[in-house]
Picture (cartoon, helix red, strand yellow):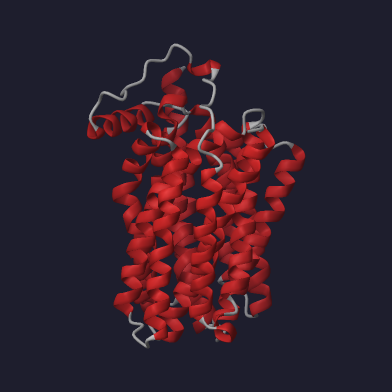
Length: 408
């Protein structure tokens, strides 16, 4: 199969997973806070359950992706991903929708995602053989573009009905199986010259626990990867929690919005992300990705302060566009730094650790911020998030200056 065909089937398979998740991003909180009239704390716990499996399973997913055919893993996961949405559609059609059924759905789809993410990320080096940063940026752009389409569909929940959207969700996941089949014969990525001669800390003969532990040690001892993991976890905990919980709560409580308005918020964020991602592709990326990551995180905090201060919904949407732009820079630069530093024999495991940092803070952040919003409100909670991120960046800069002084 040609390189162009591999690229097409990989990106289509990616779309078939992220577009349903875009539907879910709007539909899930809408079902909790509007249909079931749940509180911010209830939404926070539901989002916690959605992300919880990643904490326990994504490192295992990375290990499996390093030891087995990644396309086969995607085939199996897409097949299983069809079932939770069908189950939820059945619950809605029989008038049995409950908070408990949403929690079951969250845990099921979260488990599937924990295995899809490292397999798909580990495969990217096999696809983007010529320009890795470009491949990372394009995949990110398609990820958010697919989610954008999913947001548009999810915003129609009040008109077409949630059951119809869940059936679309299942159909797209099933189509991903076909795409994964076309990638079964994909060749392994070539070893980077930077990693030639590096002995792997764990190989196929090691037990799963030892292999995962060795990968964690590898990341902890890497001066290139550890700082990025720290910043990514802070971004997940603070910004991820705000995105998944505070934005829907503010939309409902401050602006009186429903599914359409929640969808507009997520679409605004993704519009900014897609625009900036396209710009990054056009200019060929950034020469100093680590610095770009820090600036983007700081800019994101400023956006949240602005979002907590405006009085109109349209202004709030424009601020989310800007926040999405900063998010595109942060996520693209962080993923590029990890992709470049990870050796091929550990790539999926290292990227699973990255995904754990990227998603692992979100459930806890959402849980805490959801409870906080009940006490002090969503807008004040945004101030807390911003100040906390500024403190994290200040600590990081101080810690790095200490390391440089010890070096010299």
